[in-house]
Length: 183
Image 1 (tube, rainbow, N blue to C red):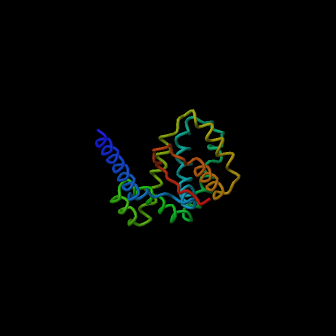
Image 2: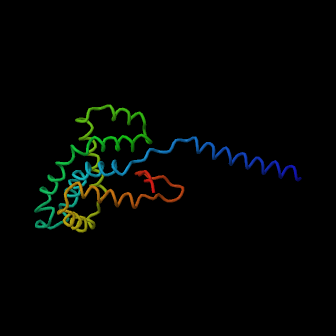
């Protein structure tokens, strides 16, 4: 009886060791640096704002911030897209690489003129479809409060918040993985 318990314990220990070894050999999912997050946010903000304004148009006042100053705000943020695009594209490709490497390779090799409108449309539609009508007033207020900031500061602030809140639950992986910074 003692031998079979020993064999059982040894087998369990060996299985645990093999599992840990396999996990160590498995490459970690790619994560985004804070600079990549900021570039991605800076690039995506105009599409996010556009999607929000379209989704909320029927639910907001005709003399509210989006109706009276939304286009100006959107244009100011859109001027920064080109500056943010190279690093944002890299981040976008990184995010997709863990899901479908073949599609990611295809997108990575397409010219920017083809990829940018695709990413912008994707972001705008995703945002627009996620916003609930009862959120529109709060979102409009938040945008109005951020409006005095330069676009690059807003991107930094949003990135800062994303980095602070980027802690997946134990045993779960994040769909928006941000690299841990050195302490």
